[in-house]
Length: 311
Image (cartoon, rainbow, N blue to C red; front, side):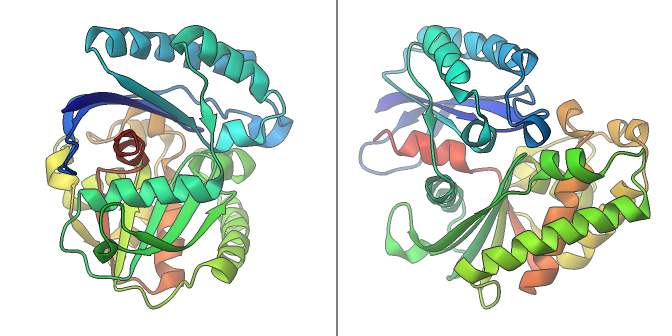
């Protein structure tokens, strides 16, 4: 077994997975799995720059991760940075911070590579899903759509992928300013979202997949709400099948709530309170546009894909 450490730094959160990797291709064995909401991409859509405050929040979280990586004796480390880091004009400042804190550079990957890692990570934890699979990874700054097949061996086979420049943070910062958001703000967000999905449909067939899989915090939080869980429970969420009507009902409920009401939901992570409406709109609209009858929620995602890539 090889102990590896994977770090996924997105627009909204930074996450760590320390795991033991079976060289024969068996499943990962988790040692540490942790998430901190640092909102690295706060304001990037408006300014084109990572703010000093956001970089500092990320540094503090990364410093704690570096200590854990050392304590647990990880032999290989890979940190991947996605949407916010790709888009920022001052991403060199971010890279220097990571190098000084972690002792290694972050890989600022393309949307296509992000999609492939997400697919590989998600399908590893979902045996028995019918091909072809349409996967969505709803992030803070971007949303990936990936069409692929699980039956093609370890990591699956990606047939088409597209990274949309919309995510829960971007939609919220662009449009959802009131508490709760107004009908006009919701309409503006939907217009933005439909345009992004139209563009995605040129690269990725939106209809015809046998399975629709969703990963990342928006999807798992909506699944937890649809399941009526008394607390966030990854084991109950992973592999759950949520009908489209339940996704629509949860989205409508969230749109009508104030921030304080959303914060009071037992399954809601504090860092997701402000942006969950934007994320829910992405998921609901994708299900409408793809004609998916349900979404299969996966607790495994790009973080698992990063770890597995270290084999």
